[in-house]
Structure formats: C-alpha cells, structure tokens
Length: 385
Image (cartoon, rainbow, N blue to C red):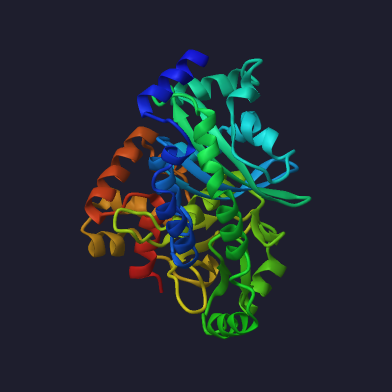
C-alpha cells in the first residue's frame, strides 16, 4: 500500500500541501456561493471532486441511532447508484459512516486505516469491488447528540489512495466548510420569512408542505395539518417526512434529493409525483416540486398532497389523446397514476413484467420523461380534474 501511495504521489506531482490544492480560493468562493444556490452544495462538491482527483463526493446528514441517511447532496453519483445503495441498506455495512457517527467534528481522514483488518463483511467487500473503490477522504463537519454531518470524497483503485499531504491541503478548507454548513442551517430562521411563506402556503388549495434544501419540513399549511391528523401512512417526525411503507420512504428520499439538488440535464429538476398507498382507501397523490432560490428561501421543495377519492383521475382514453399514445400504453399510464406497480400492472393486464417495462420505455420516449414520478406528474398536471 505504501508503494501504491508513493506512486500516486509521483503521478499527481504532489510536493507539498500548497500545490496539492492549487485552486483553494476558487473552492472557498464556490463554497460560500452554495448559500445562495438552488442546488445547495452540489457545485462545490463537483469542484472539490475534480480538485482532489476523486470520483464522487457527498455531504450527508446522518442519524446516529439507528444509522440512517436523512439528506444528501452529492456529485458524481448516478440515481441508479443512490437507489442501489438505499435498497441494499449499504449504510449498515459502510465502514466510514459507522465509524464517523461515533466521532466529533475534526479534520479530514483517510478511510484506509478503518479497513486494516479487512472489510466489515461480504456485502461491503462486494460493494467496494463492484464500484472499484479504494479510499475516501472523510470529515465530520458537525455533530449533535442525535446526528452528524459527514463530507466524503471517494477515490477508485485507478486514482490511488490519499497521501497525507493531500489530506493536509484539504484541511485548509475545514473551517470554511464548517462555517458555511452552519450558516446554511440558520438561513430559514428569520421570523418574517416564516410569516411570508405561511401566507403563501395557505393560498394553495391542497395540503402543502415546504421543505428546505436539507429535506426538513419548515412549513405546513392548515390542510396539511388536517391530513397529518387523519392519515397513518405518513407523518412528520423530527421535522422530516416518515412513511409507513419502507419502499415509499426510499422513493421519497430519492425524489427530494433530485428536487433539492436540481441537477438535471437542464439544470432544473422537474416535478415528480409519488403515489402513497393506504390500507383501505385509495392512494394519496404527492407532488414534489423544486423551489428556486428567492428572497424567502435558499431553494427547497414544495410538496402538495391530494386525496384521490376527491378527484376524478384521467382514464386511458384521455391519456392516449393527450399524449399520442397507443391504447395499451395509455392503459399502463392509467394504472401508474392510480398507484399500481409494474408488477401489479402486469398481473392486471395479463402481461409479463418485462412487457410492461418495454411499454414504459416507449411511453418515456414519446412523452420526453425519464422517470415514473415525472411521467405521473406530467399526466396529472395536464388532465387531473
């Protein structure tokens, strides 16, 4: 490992901490600009990843017990990777995270010492191998009795391990990172901001919730409070949305991460719709919209929820006419809108799940959408009455 690190040093031409991070001033400027950017810390993470020759970076809000991600900004990770990480509960096997939640704020460290005795299990070993990961520079930015904020920058085998002089250079950024993250957590606390947002939210005809760009609920209108009192499928705990169904919780996390990062190909995240199933009644329809930075809010998310029992949902005929779809494609859309999974649709329509997926691919191509949530949102926006 020592020879590998020395090889990495020669490869990158690192002589001391001064030239290990030559664009330090640009990084600090980008960091403070994050306070006024709709995408939060995404641009800073992207710049930091490039500056230290990493492959991906994350700024993550993590609950200590049980260990769980509550919000994340990231650069260099695909939606597919984030979904895989969540669906396989990889945080339970993540050596860095499980060590970091026991620590107080400090300086950047390498992950390699945490793995001296080998990976903590087969799942972690497979993860590292599949992703070709070698090392992570990690920093506990902030910590409380219940949570930590963790900054990590990964490297692959091809990029080599972090050399001590590189970590020393990254430590020049630590006081600025810590100050900026703390500032970001206070920007929503001005009394007039809350009053103005509240007045706007009460004009929304549905149950409405405003989340800041850390995924925390900062405002609920009266209809939202009534909804929470009458429903058991969703609730707000510790200022965050909680769902009774684990799959819905994961889908919600991915949706608000995309909305708050707003890093789509156009730079603006599209609204997404999440169908929240209920045991007896028809599902709730939750629409997640990104909020742009303005004088009231440094970005965030607007969530509206409607009870499908109170609305007439669009049928296949109307969907086919509006979006120029074939009858069978429109039937798939009709079923998605009322909350059926692809497996459910396959059973209902007497098709294989692979066939339904092929229909969905054609629907995406014709409508210009790339996710089910976006597709449902587009259909409901056009046709819901």
